[in-house]
Image (cartoon, one colour):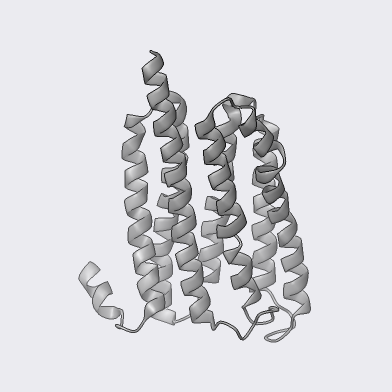
Length: 248
């Protein structure tokens, strides 16, 4: 079956190729994070499990998105947002898990989850349901602005707000640096998605990238953000576990 898929992908079909690479990379990362749970102390096992779930869920969706794109030639918008609605809130859960030892509460967890869900639901409505048709910008802009509100809330929380303050009070330089690295992912890595959104039909930047190029853009962003997020969490877990072992 794998051989048939490879034979189906034309040498110049870069979109399908990035779907295929994304699927393999996410699957490999998921196995790695799950296996490495055994190398960290108990209090960090949940963080690595969440990292494994993020990349594992993405791998499953990339498997279906790859096939959907090969069969139809269309952008798998629905499957992509189903993936994001599951994985992005889990990425926000990582901030809670990293700072709960410093006093993070369940209210912070739910605020981050709700903000990320709001961001994605608004983005999906703006991208998938445009009553004005191709070339209509009012719908995409309205829902894009609403989606951005959720993004800005998360961005503020991890750079200046509750998450940032908790990481500073954690007493761990590893956690501080790790949370700051994840905050950079939110600021730079997640900013890739609004750019892709604005390049769709009806967006402010429409015409800069074709739908095919937007898929390549999204695929590369997903691999960098989700695997990169997990690797930062993994480095924190390993470093903190080593400190715990030295104390015992």
